Length: 277
Length: 188
Image (tube, rainbow over all chains, first blue to last red; front, side):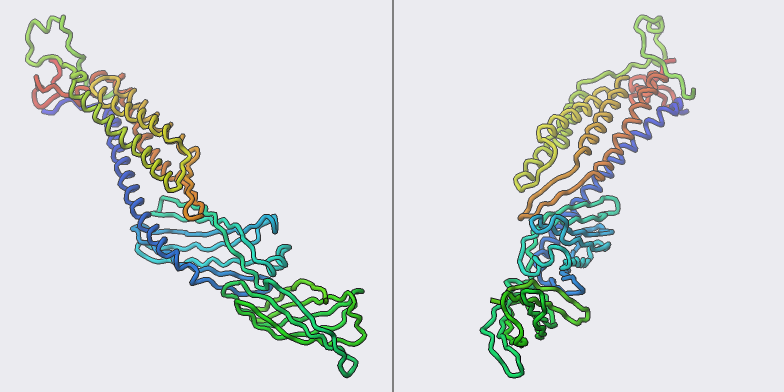
């Protein structure tokens, strides 16, 4: 013989109490495994961080200099990382009020006990107002990296990482120096010109030509000449001779040059104007 | 209204007392010393886990540049309140105050978590990198147990009103005068 049957309300309260305890136990255990797994993953990433610069490369397309950073993200935890996306913003308020470059990467999925690769391809457009400055000057850029991912299916990760990025100018310390104009046969004048710059962009190799244009003070183009050039990271010195007609006055003249690469992909940027001294 | 009829506690002045029944009226167990000792132990354990441990971890993390948006003292005070309400919940289980205390306990847990959700961002500066970690979704998951607990408390409170002594007799059956066939020791 059984005792009296409990009321529905009693049974409901009993079920809810058990559910609350089960939910709490499940969440605590789940959180513990997620935390442990995330620590395992973090340790793996920290070990990989030292190899970040080995996969840095750069190329020039159109008016853009593309800096590509590829870095592996090991996941030594139990849980999957889903939809890993990165957004990086590069700014330098003293150069330009708006961001110099915005880049996105992903989404990438990284399985548990697996490895994922994230390529962060950043385009610095030299046609921007800050372009001439960045072509010629190194700069310390402030970067903000936003990382979004879903870890363990239900735990979203939102990281905002502020970092500093050293921009290496591809034509740093650009200078022209010219020797004494010398009269040549055929009514021309030879001007020995030395073009010097340093390519500070890591991994950036450009093959192309510098077209130098000598312009008189009144705006008349005196002569235009092209020199082949291959830039590797490091100093580049071009010792060339510009031949100009003897009608050029050279008083207040300036020399303007354009670096262009036929590609593929084609690349063309204007270098700043310098006076002939 | 479903459910069996459960008798109220014995009235010492009733005539039934003079004629010794086969099964004595149900005697509520009351709040025993052992229960109070258990409640105090649980309060201390809860305070350690919910109050002091977060307080300690926050201070430990601060040494490594990890700054939390919550004052450490607030964690201690809130953890103490959570622990005291949990202890009260254990102590008052054999009484009709249990339901309301559980409602208060779960309600405070919800308010506490909602407060933590106002600014769920940890900021760390490590090797020149500033990392901000948002943990709002994890906290939102932890709203589930107290939300269910709140419903359970409400159901218990209403049940204790509609079916007086049912829960207490079911959860604390009389062992002195067992009812025939394994009943709940109710009065005849």
